[in-house]
Length: 255
Image 1 (cartoon, rainbow, N blue to C red):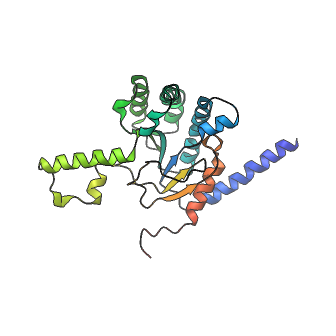
Image 2 (cartoon, rainbow, N blue to C red; image 1 turned 45 degrees about the vertical axis):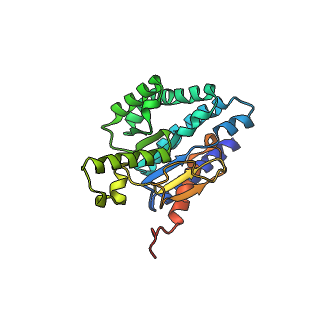
Image 3 (cartoon, rainbow, N blue to C red; image 1 turned 120 degrees about the vertical axis):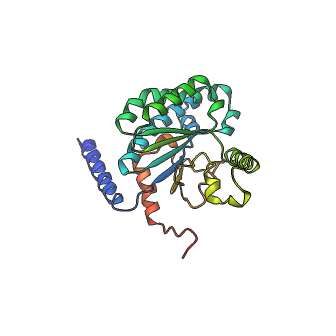
């Protein structure tokens, strides 16, 4: 009985905090470096794959909550170009996760009006992963709610190099003039060319670095770091991050 009372009190308090947060500015684009799955599993004497599975459940929960708050874009760092260095068994399992997630939760994403996107070098993904990704993109492309943008086989330096290569080709082909090149034009060559830059970056697990994630796009993003491991990350933690974002003065170099 006491436990149920405490649970109701906790839910009531969180509801009040959510209402207060909704009165302030909500970041249009939130990017998350989802870190700590392996350490979560190790603490429980479980295989690393168990941590990745639990992390997938957190993705579902936070996607739903971000949509409720009115976030327009949620970009999740799911698999980096450097992650191929991990043991093959772990990489193989990580390549199954997008398929498991999208096949399981696609009806829910469609019902919630979420649009799925993927940025990264998709041509290097296994065929079964690619099929699941393409199916989700196709079946949600008409949705007008939250954009759930997975960074899959993504690395920011590779993205920038590729953008420069395309830009040089267009200059050499006469499509554009070198004098036309500015920040806005360069942005159009990036994988996020039709998305706003992130307003808020969240990184879990206590690490304080960007790990080759959206280096160009994060130039004026507010950063929020937490020691919480990704499988333990809750809606309450997300509210804390947004609350901290709302307390900051974003001057973009001005006064």
